[in-house]
Amino acid sequence: MFVGITNTPRNYAWGSTHAIADLLGRAPSGVPEAELWLGAHVGSSSIIEDASLVGGAANLAEWVAAAPEVALGVDLAKRETDAAGSAAGSPASAAPADFAAPRLPFLLKILAAARPLSLQAHPTTEQARAGFELENEAGIAVDAGNRNYRDPFHKPELIFALSDTFEALCGFRPLNEVRGILAELRLLDLSTDNPQAAAIDSLENHLALGLRDTVDWLLRDGRGGDSGEVKWLVERVVALAQHAESLAAGGATIGYARELATVRALAAAYPGDPGIVLALLLNRVSLKRGEVLYLPAGNIHAYLSGLGVELMAASDNVLRGGLTPKHIDIEELLGVLDFSAAPAPYLAPVEEAPGVSRYRPGVPDFELVHIEADADAVSATPVPMRQITLAGPAIAICTIGGFLVAGGLSSRPLKRGQAVYVTPDEGTLTFAGTGEVFLATVGA
Image 1: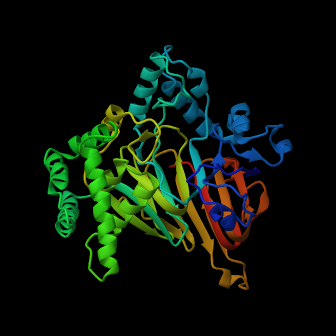
Image 2 (image 1 turned 60 degrees about the vertical axis):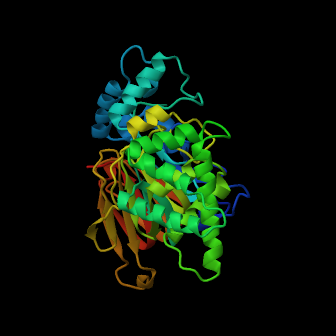
């Protein structure tokens, strides 16, 4: 079954006022449009365009709850029922019924960032279940501002860059690179009228004790008020980044210029936030269109700007680490973070056929398939066709051109800006046409 779905973009303040509308061929709403959610997450479940197809359900979450074996398929419904029974936890759980039914395990988004998002990380399944239980036992409301775990699920995610560049921070960079940045800051400091080497010394001294100690110090001391060592460090690093900009304008060559430009951008968006300095410890990534990052549990990251397709496990569990006025639980964050220094985690596709690329992060919740057929081939005979065999339900959205999508039971056209939910009984899907489609489905 093909079920047309739609939704209203989330108007978070960091969103672009036009990028999602431009991509999908819609008129801008006039307010920031940050994320278009396509899925059955109760936070913003997709609206079903023709409720008569699904027994009158108004949205995807209602339909999945009412007819899981139809919407999800028998196999996934059983898998999710078994997982839900385990995730719901002990009778002490405050709201086990919310997670005791089968669910669509992935959430597809179109994301458009016009300004930086918060630094954040996500838990493993085991961490999420334990944290969810503890907060339930403590009587913390699920929607409370100081709640860390709003459900018992992990939240790995990937981002596929749609804009020419997509800017991000992602994971801890190698320490030799951090030392290179500190050396550049020292040179800049020496070139000022009032050198303050002790500010950089404080960061280097903590780094000698390890990344965990450094992050703890930055967040704990940095959020302690208007005084403190970290406040001085943040002010000094921002001043040196601004000094570097002035020197570059005069023709000087500046090392780590991109990182220092990031400091200036973060300082403009979140003045005084310790995340400004924390960002220097992280990989600074510029994705080109078509490149993908995979962010597993424990990876600290922040999207800075750009348009992309985001696919994640359907969870609300976020541990924040700066660049935000929202709640930060330092102890819980430190317990979740992976402090391993490693290159940015790019995810390469499996090329299944010409024009069909599958991104497999190795989790059961989701995979992303990118389908494209060159518009220059529109006059070809026969019309270009791409095939995908489903292992579970899927959601597809067309971002360029148009296709006729046919399954084992039915078919429907899919044009730019349209999205469709596909039940697994359609089997193998054939996409005939030209353009670009993103298809989210469950992992193998």
